[in-house]
Length: 162
Image (tube, rainbow, N blue to C red; front, side):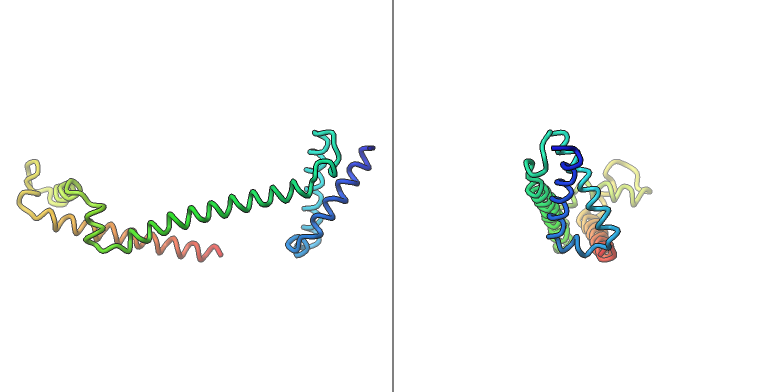
């Protein structure tokens, strides 16, 4: 097959494939020409590299598989993001007591007390004279409020992107 007729065969196959797409038909004419031209260029390079024609390569099947693979990857990523979001929201929605038990240790309370009350000298002296449970509860509330704020900011950002 002559190079010109090979390119014609590729162009015909691309036009046939793209004409079936409602999304492609909804593009402005200039954008349609650009997409078609770029697709022909890619298909021609593939066919030339393989030394075959587009009909032998099953270009429509190749494009279909590529689109399905891309779509599946996007869906999988969206599912993973939604699962991570669900875990974050669940952590924020916990009661303060449960959040405290799961996320704030006695060591966190000791460090917080020692930093918050620097006038008390001596290792652990602040934790010996003050209730560590009150410190843990304060830390848990602050962290939970910070998480809630982050979730709201994320939701607002997601809504702005739509």
